[in-house]
View 1 (spheres, rainbow over the protein chains, first blue to last red):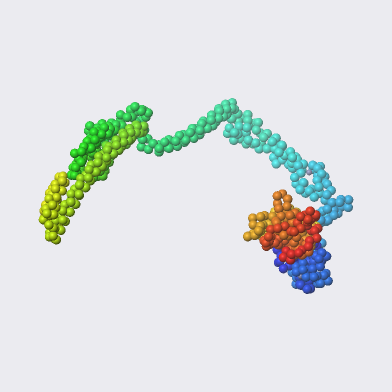
View 2 (view 1 turned 180 degrees about the horizontal axis):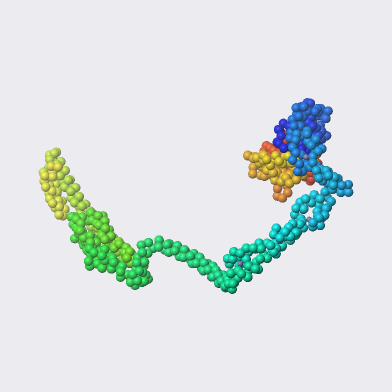
Length: 482
Length: 153
Ligand SMILES: [Zn+2]
Ligand SMILES: [Zn+2]
Ligand SMILES: [Zn+2]
Ligand SMILES: [Zn+2]
Ligand SMILES: [Zn+2]
Ligand SMILES: [Zn+2]
Ligand SMILES: [Zn+2]
């Protein structure tokens, strides 16, 4: 036996390294104690006279049978019977005994003239299973081995009708069932509600007295009508489905539009309810300014924010040039409200220019908030947008003119400041001269070495210098005591 | 009745399927017990970094008693590694494939040996007699009478 089907994985110590299978008739080398199958190592030695594992010289004479322990270990390995379909599992050394009796062993057919093979268990009765037999019912040729299976399904095997007990063949029983006089049937009007049940032969008798038979014509008309209605219903159902889908899409769009429109959506709805069309562009402007009016109530003459802004814009250029007048350029800074006249409503006179710039601009901003009315949600979106745009246009022109005016004001201020700086410089020069004179004076007093002539010259000079400074009060003499 | 080589190779194939190949070696083709193909790649730093070669094993009925015929594939755009023991036609001059063959060796152990042969290479060059050998080489490298001049292989 050259090959075994081991049912369990084998301990690697029992595996021959040449054939990689558990040892068969194991032999061991004397010199290096390596174990192989006898067949494997004999073949290897024919090829090369050395041990395959360590390449030491080896001849067939150096091999001895492996010890009884190894032999019994490999002999006890479980193997399965190699014959197809045989489930037998046994120890390896017992397999040969099983094979001698295995029912699944392939043997020659017992019939001498037949040259086919059969498994042993089919050969025991001595008959050739390959020979065909004729079915006694259907006269078909059936192999001996398949005869049992055939007889249970043979279409011509006899059986009897369960209703009329007629003997018929299996293949025709279904056909008979449809005509059997004693088979139970229902009335032909059962779909319409007749509950009659009985043998087929009695049905004709029932039909002549069946109440449904009398109104047969009505049923036909009714059936047609119902069918037409069903068809129409299906059509309508499809239409409704389509419309529902359409409605869903529209609702979704509407919600998106609603979200985008915000508060104007409700206004539009209100106006529509009031009977006014939503699209009415010419109307939109008048209500805008009119509705803005109440918000700007503190300024009765102004018709609206647009008007008030434009009024500011047009008034502004006039006072601005006035601020350039040279009268303002002097040492004592007076109220310079002229340069801020254009801020029509701030109007609180500021005592100081430098003080005027920042806080008053804040005031102006808060006033602007009062002047420009809040967005009117009462009109249509289009009207509001139009009003907003108007405001934007006026605002931009106002900003423009404000820019121009502040530029002029800045230039004026710069000129004035320049002059002021110059006058301060002159004052400073005078002061320096005075200090110088005083210092000279003190030097004279402290040292007392100054001659009369020189002192007079100095004294005469100093007042002259003092008198040259315009608008400068005479320095009191007490200043020398500083 | 299956031949010895078929039984032994089916065992080796089962082992490869169950346990996989060592790193850098993959089974490419093993449709019968006549010839198998493996790809072989040297892992880590070496002269053959990122190069992948294909090994062809051819078995006769006496395997594993007789050695398999092993060579690198040099067709279909595949090349043999440039190595002092590998000829440009894919033949390998390695003693374990000839006189040093032992039935205890296996396909995978041959792959691993060749992998380490490539990994230990110091200089990429062909054998000195490459051109002369390739001109007259037999189809099967086992028919060549190899002269192993290097003990390390
Ligand atoms: Zn063996
Ligand atoms: Zn040994
Ligand atoms: Zn059996
Ligand atoms: Zn027969
Ligand atoms: Zn039959
Ligand atoms: Zn019947
Ligand atoms: Zn009826």
